[in-house]
Image 1 (cartoon, rainbow, N blue to C red):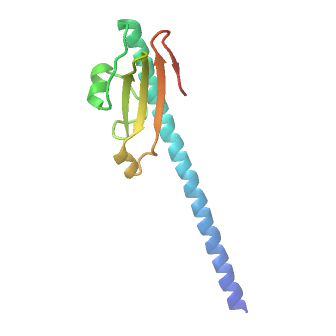
Image 2: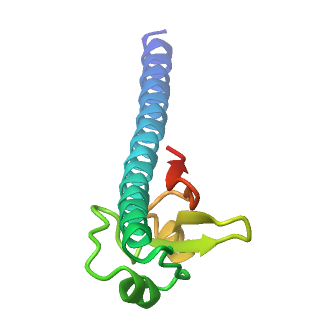
Image 3: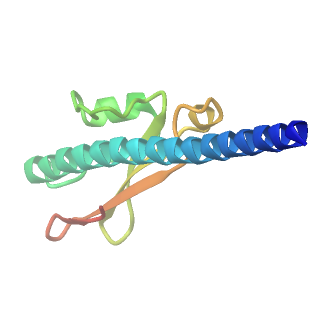
Length: 135
């Protein structure tokens, strides 16, 4: 009888610890994803600010593709904050209507390595009034 109670109690403790571990790991992943999203938002906003300054100076946006080299040529010296080129790719593409689409995207290899959560963080800048939309 005591052996059965002890065994049942140990199974109960093991189940409780397993549940707690699962809940804590899910909470940790949520915090990880929030941190990644915040880093991407900071980077996109800084790129948008640099783009608006470029538009004010030159009358056009500085478009670039997802390569770090292209961004550095078009927007030299920009500080992306905590976001890194190893974890995210960034681009700024102009559509036919004159809207600039700035995006931060998690790099596939960074997601596979568990460094960042998969995400896409966009912002749009409209050339006519240089107003943006986004987070």
